[in-house]
Structures are given as C-alpha cells and as structure tokens.
Image 1 (cartoon, helix red, strand yellow):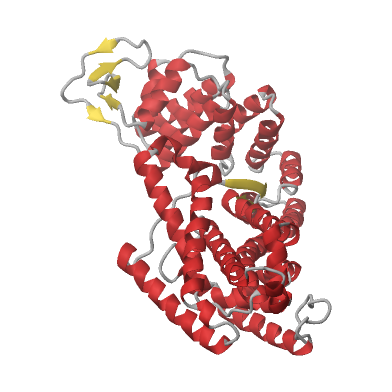
Image 2 (cartoon, helix red, strand yellow):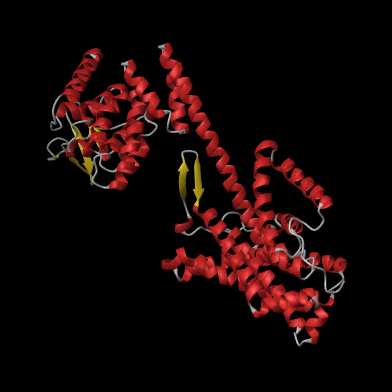
Length: 527
C-alpha cells in the first residue's frame, strides 16, 4: 500500500511539473498533508510551478499548523471552522479529525516554497526577501519556479540575485555543461554561502574536469573573501580610531594646551554617556513618538553636562594646582574614583542599556562578508565634524585666540587684559564637553557603565603624546593610526599581545622623536 502511494505521488509530481497552469485538486491537497515527509515534499514541489491562490492559501495554512485531516477529507481551519482547501466551502469537522504534524524538514521546505511563491509578488521588497531566503537552497525541485521567476524579473538587482540562486540550483543538474556554467557564474560572487555550496558539490562530483573547475572557483572566492576581511579590519580600525580621536580631542586641550594631566577625563566621558542614557529614557517616557531622534537631543546635553562638571572641577581643584603636574595627577585620579562611585550610587553598578535609533541600526553590505554598521559610520562622521568644529574654534574665534595666547604666554596675555582665570575655566570646560561628546558616541556602540572611562584614558593619553602635545593634526593621525594598527595586530596576535605591541611601538617612537609626530613650531615665549 505504501509503495502504491509513493507511485501516486511521483505521478502527481510529473503531471504538476509538465502540465499547464491548473487549479488545486483534492488529490494534490491530500498529498501535501498526509504521508511521509518525503512524499509530502514531493507533492509540494509538484504544485509550486503552477500554484494558484488556493494552493498558496493551503501551503500557508500547512505552515501555520492550521490544517486537520481525516481518511476522506482535508480541512483548512480558520476561527474554529473548517473549509475545503479546493472549493473554499465550509465543512463540518469530525471529532476524529487529526491535527497536521510538520517535522523540521517539512517546515524548512514550506518556508522555501512560500519564498518561491513570493518571487512573483508585485512588491519589490517581498521579492527581495524571497530571494534572500532561497540563496542557500540547493533543492533542484525549486529550479523550474526559480527559472520562471528569473525570466519574468525586471528589477536588475533582484534579477542578478535570482541568477545566483539559479546557478546554485544548477549545480545539481545532470548535464555537465550546466554544472560548469553554474560554477563559472558562482565563482564571481565571493560569497561564503556559495563557497559552502561548492564544497558540498565537490564531495559528490564524479567528473574530473568539473572538480578542477570547482577547485579554481573556490580559490577565486577565497581571494575575494580575503579582501573583504582586510577591508573589514581597516574599517573596524578606523572606527576604533575615530573613538580614540573623540576621546583624545578633549584631552588635547586640557593636557596638550593647558598642561593639565587630568586622570578624570575618562569619567567626564562616562558622564556624557550617562547623560545620553537619561535623555533616552526621558524620550521613551514623554516623547515616544520621537524616540528615534533622542540622540540629537542627547548630543548637546552630554556636552553641556560634562562641560559643567569640568568647569566645577577646574574652579574647585585644578586652578590651585597649575604648574604642579604630580599633584594634579593625584587629585584628578581621586576625583575620578569619586565620580565613579557617585554614578554607582545613582544608577547602580551594572551597565545600563542605551538603544540605537532605528536610523542607526543595520548597515551597508559592501561585500558578501563585509557589512558597515550605520552606527559606526555615524561615529566616524561625527568625530570629524567635532574635529572641524574644534579646529575652527581654536583658529578663528575670540575664545580660541585667548586660549592660544594664554597657552603661549600667560603673563603677556594677562598684561594686555585677558582674564586668564576665566579662559582657563572655559578651555577646561570645552575639553570636558568634548569628552562628553565622546561618551555620547560610545553609548551607541558599547556598554555604558561606571568603568567606561577606564577603558580609554590610557589609550587617549598615548594618542595625544604620539601625535604631538597641543597638535590637533597629530591627534587625528595618531588616533586613526593606532586604531587601525591595533586591529591589524589583534587579528595576528590577539587582543592582549596587540595592546603590548602598540605600547612598545609608542615607547620606541617617543624615544626617537620625543616631540611626537607633529612638533610644536617655534620657541616657547617663556624660554
């Protein structure tokens, strides 16, 4: 009896694949619902190429486990009522009707079948999603429907993707020429999924020349994947470098221009990150409709809060310690511990969640194994915007002129009427505010916790010293350079050894060139 049923299913498959568009029949409906998973899958594939609306509805119902059956009938269940899958008429459901059972293999086939059906949807987004679902499918039974969709597709990007799906399915073709054509097409993709398909095909391939072609295609794909990995390392390094640049910009002012060793700089950055967290929560509770734009409000808030804390720190402690670097270091280190404990008391010792806005989620797929996240792209752009703003302010504004004057010759600036104490406070507040901006940016890519600043304070000092004290251009080169160098070394030797190697490089470099990459031009006015 079982063999007779298998023969019936195979016959139905042949009729379904070869015939013209036909309406769903009771026998086809039953074959998809009752029997062994392999037989049901064969019946499913047989109706795909000529699926009408009722067929699609039945496949969806099977996928949703909304089908019952008896020895004589199949029922599509909706709102507790049963309907005939062929005619759509309501039917009484017997008490002995059994629920459909879909094993994992069947569920996978149903998902692929629904995706194949969506290839003919008028909605471009649905067709794009369907192609992505079918990219890893290696079932030759889907080939007729994919080829039909490929011929009908008009959107170039979807047609290219469908062509790759078609080529993947042709790998299992009986004709050697089709397999060779498919391999040649797939070799140009550089996709990890395609590489897996070719490796699987290589295991079962019997023709020597086809095996040779697969080996050559795998080498081509490996070369393209290697480029994706290299570019990924460079981008990740630039992302890390832009974060170091943001952190070091504020330090370049407080240490580079003012000569203050501020060990609490990392905690000022942490305050900016927590300010972002607070703004996020306020938007979530009071302006949920505008939540995706909370980050635009968090930027000035994080700057203002950190700048205010920095101004209080300068007025309350730092102004009494100018010219005494060791005392400044110890005092600001103690203040950093106090700020961390204050944050633990208010927000708790655990990390707090900061959510990316919708427009900063996701990324741009540049290559099959290289996706550039939007949040990191935004941080790189933000870092350079902040850098441009700081450079313009230092070079073109009255405050920048006063800061440069006080830095170069404090006594002469005071003699010509510059309030040096006020300028010191403004400059320190500016550097602290930039640290707050760094914290705001960091909240979009990492954890926000009381120890956030400790992870970046040493690296940011290294950036400032390596770039040249007081040199913004040096800070840019050093920040990006160290970020890329660190990520390259991490892939080669691991994170810990990479940190040690970077530190050794900086020590050796400073020994040979103490002034850093960019030396301060001219002589000190106080020399």
